[in-house]
Length: 126
Image (cartoon, rainbow, N blue to C red; front, side):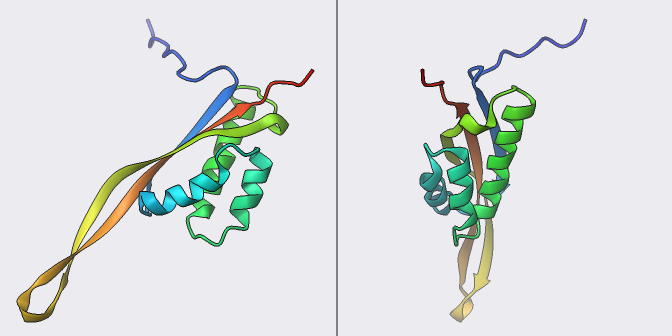
């Protein structure tokens, strides 16, 4: 009796990595995600490592995890991988209060994001 195996949602030539609760707004994370969408993995890693944005370091970790998943779990060729999809989603929002003049308060929103990254192997050119 064991667990039923779950069907794979991706193709055989794809691998995925997912990061939850990244402490940055989805709007800022999407700016970084847009720079690497569709690029080869080596070029995307170089782009992220030289990016001046703070969140680029977390995106590097997710991309390296997706590459490792492709190599170890799905036996894909690392040299032919490219970023096929990268989607940014909204997670929870922490709400904080800051005291203001005359006994009023103002709200501080601290948003979190989710990141889903899919790498795919390019077909061989004949």
